[in-house]
Length: 225
Image 1 (cartoon, rainbow, N blue to C red):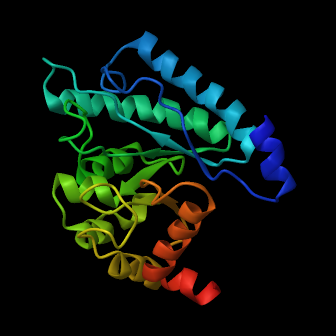
Image 2 (image 1 turned 60 degrees about the horizontal axis):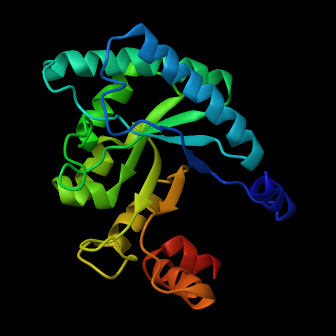
C-alpha cells in the first residue's frame, strides 16, 4: 500500500507485476479442477494488489512440465486453463502476459520458447492473455530475436531486455539492442518495455548508469532526453 501511495503521489503506475506463485511444479499443464480454481483465485488475489499500484499487466509463468504426460496434452490443458484464468483477468481489467523461460537456467519449465508461447496465446484467443517476450531468455534458448519478434508480433504485450551473457545492462553483451529497439519503434510498439537486468552499481550512480545504458541503445529515449 505504501508503494501504491507513493506511485500515486508521483503520478506513476507499476505497469507490470508477477502473479504466479507456483513456478517450480506442474500447474497450468494439469487438467485438474482444483488446480484451475486455484489459478483463478490467484488472478483475483493479484487483481487486488494490481489496483493498489496501478498495474495492468501480469507476468505469468507456466510452471514445470509434468514428468509423464505427453507434451501435446499438457499444451491443451494449459490453453484451457488460460482461457478460464484469462476470463477472470478480463473481469479485473488485467492482461496475463505468458513468459517463456530459458531451459538452461530453469530446467523443467514447460514453456521455454517464444513460438510455443505464441501458439498457446493464439489458441486461447483472448485479449486478456498475451505474450511476454524476454529477449534475454530467448537468446539463451535459441536466438533469432528479431525473426521471432516479427512472427509473434500480434500477441506481444510486453518485452523485457537484458544483455547476454551475465544478464547485464544493454550494451554489455552480445545482443544488438539498438537494432531490436529500433524495430520496436519502427513497428509502433505500444506495449510495455521492462528492464530486467542486474543494476550496474549501487545507489544513484547505479541508477544513472541504467538510464545511460538504455539511452545509448534506444531511439525513443535519445529523442526525449
